[in-house]
Length: 300
Length: 245
Image (tube, rainbow over all chains, first blue to last red; front, side, top):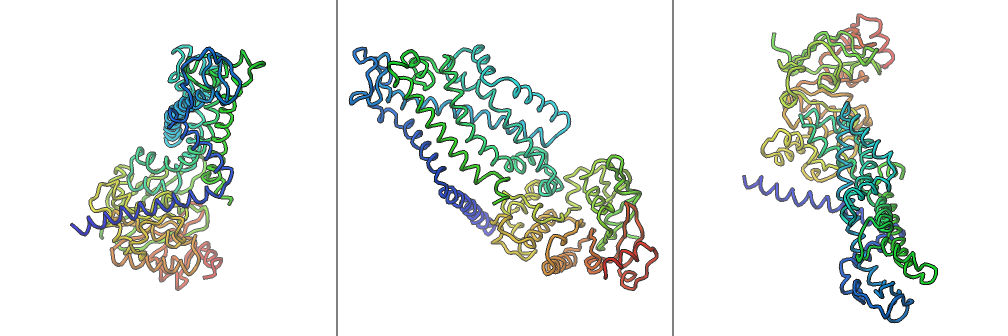
């Protein structure tokens, strides 16, 4: 008995070591892509800003200072102040938290929902596939922002509702993609082999087919994040996302609109923040796709 | 007469309008190695896939060790017969370590000591336990086919269906795999049903063989008949001539 236990313990650590080797080799290949590293750096800075916002921000992002209304960028307010005299740099730094919150909420809901629906649909086929895919078609046919608008209008504005609304429009592409991958894999020999061993369909779906869809989903996720940030900013801009005084970037651009000809910095600074973060996610996603996409990998 | 380990009676398989297997019957005795030979598209692989339940539209009777294929739940059936696929590059999950792939059938059946038995199986097929933590892409074709054989043996079936087990491998590796299979058949008392279009492989491996053409059985021969050219059908003669055996 003890020898078996020992074998299991050694086996466990050796299995983990082999997995770790895969991770290390992935990181090494990733580090060879300079643009990907640049994107990763932007995202790391974003995460750092969000985590340490209270220590990084020079001013209180909510406290009005009416003597300092619409101050241009200078020594006191590095990136200027807005119409209530609040420091824009501090608000942008705090806004990174809201951006990450929305992106995180959408990704952890949309990707698993889409993945599950797509894989089940692709694996089972038949009427289940027809029902799931027609529902997906309907969601894909409705204009994204319009669906999100209708949803927020029904539930009321707010960060979480905005995230839910974006989720509602973001899952169908994942379902489509996961279904395509599942269709390619479901009758492969290695899936048939476990089927012959008597595995249940649920076991096949979760342990054998889903892992094969993960790389496409991860690639799609990182490339999607930029779009999610833009949609969230759009909802904020038309006043259906984060509500004042929250320093959400889209909402900040919206208030800066009134002063755009005389006090350009009010709208420009959050705009730049959105631009840089979206660019970062796109570069990161592109680099990850180069490494993970099974169709690209075959060519290299 | 002892009960055959595999008996197929009046098996007919259709894919839409085409008939892939037309009224085929044969039986494999316990411990026997039986070959299915024919050109591409003659329906031999389809017979194996039908026995394993991977083909939907078929009629006839298939019995493995007395169990009716159509009526036996797959979990129970799996303990009596397993299959080794043709392409070792496609038959192992690319994201699973070798040890996990071999242990998976035992996990599905909730067998105890799956890890220890995995190591035993790896030794049995001549790879050794250090291979348990490698991924398929780190192995050669022959090593992968050994792993596929180990996985098929995990549930200790009495019958193995081998679908062109060596056609994707180069010649020197083919001999290794065939010798491994012969050794396993003797040590574990297995029975084989081997599909191949390579007569050299079949005459080396099989006690009896069945020649197929256009979904039908042409004739059934023993190994001696094959070696002595004791053939009844013109097609078999042509097939042998074309194989230059």
